[in-house]
Length: 393
Image (cartoon, rainbow, N blue to C red; front, side, top):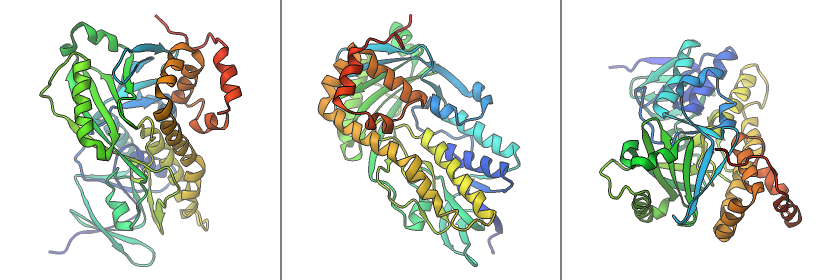
């Protein structure tokens, strides 16, 4: 039996935030991409679900119904020790259910006239007629002039194109625990997330509130898997939960901190497929949205006949995104050496907290901080008592 054959200008593999945003931007520019995902939507996605303010600025204004918890406070501990809380007068991030959030973005694509094939798995990519590619999926053959991999950390598009964009891998382990199991202490997570650092090199733990559940997880370097499981058990004990029988879900977080290739010919990678998650925080939605917008701009220029438009995509990523990811990696490594001192400064002084708030809101970047990272400037800043971002009631 002959497989059905379809053709399109742009095939986007993966319908997460990067893929859905790219599809919508191309539709607005007059192209009609085909977007595929191996999962049937709405689908469950393992993720802490933190949506930073800087990411929110790249999203549609009618996202409100999808947002769950507004976060203004961060409770911090070092090596699961004594915790302290810092707060902001303005929201730092919102928590979302990735199932609802991703479905919202895909529905926006559908309403704009996009074609979406969920439950359709990409199997391989072959050379097609001319400069096009032929995609073999679980349902059909698709010929596309441009192919974009938005299919996450284990990108099959990257493998098919022979691309290896990732420098480092983190492993995240996360459990969803009903709020009511926390008893009275659950109220401490109103508008508040919890972060623990310093327990293991390049590792961290988190508690994010999302509706009636708490997302309790740990992350660290991929080879530290057994240590991460022990860390998670310690975290549960620290929170007064003891052993829990809820599923412990794992997810990979890819990090590209050097200019490794993220495109080959007319095949491009965006978001996690390109390794664009922040090394220190593990946050990947902002870079997914940013890279999708950059890719859309270059693809539209390509279809308008501009020579070299596609090849400019990686140059733009390396100019606008990579320096921030590299700076985040460098600050993370520095924190491994001065962790206890950094926590004492963060607890005692306003300036480090102000900087953190600005980064979360997109008003300051790690790259900008790196440029100003001079001892004389830092010393003066620490001595100045600022009234901004004081704890709120």
